[in-house]
Length: 367
Image (cartoon, rainbow, N blue to C red; front, side):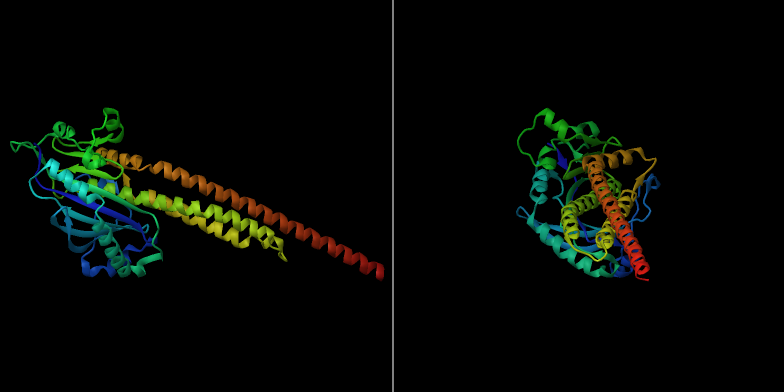
């Protein structure tokens, strides 16, 4: 029987709270909570290039009843400059529990209603504290949820730590996929393809909603760092994809209304629309580029593999392709409306010239 020495579940709830956050200003506003600009602590930490490191701030502690047991919850948040706030709730599992008990603990915690209430309360308090640092504040409808199950080590019945090969044989399906029925070998291969080990006693398993990290080094949290970063980037891509989805139908309706409207100067009919389109394309392009360049992995092959797998798993390229396609539609629409406005202005100018010629002819005849 496998035992978990010390384990915890870290529930992440990520929200977009505005267009951007001034991190220097936020640091000043959060000074009483000892915030810090955390960077990776691995020896190869310089391989992660983060131009504007996010802020990590402690939010206190609460308690949560999971099953029939009360657990302490450590709350903290990470604030990203591109407008995302990630709330983290760390719930410790019972010490020296069976793997089956740890799995049950994780299943009960994953969609615990108490987490939603805790998130809403602390998100409101935090955003109120940093309100003046948020540019164009608005709480987006889309958000991300992710859980990392962190374990120091897993031992066998005799107390010996499982090695990487033995860890690979763990039944993680109930914990990570919340499936209690036996899955086929094909389903396991398809749903659990992202498995990594660096040393002989560690393991990282990534899925769409959860991850398992077996790591003896208590302070080595780089893997969680980059998975959280990938979730923050995913949230921004999802947010701007939804924003553009809503913009396109509204844009088509506004074009029809503008065309039906009679104007003294037809060339100015689309002026407001063109201005809105230009701002939308500029904002979306600038922020998406900033999000994608917020973290770069250079020469740490292991972290690069985990980060790339996270982006692949979260379908980052697919979301970006969708955004690019919609931005292309907006650019084409801008070009079409601008061309139509130019044609209307040219037609108005031609009519004015003709009218002046006619007036001059009439004046000449009268004289």
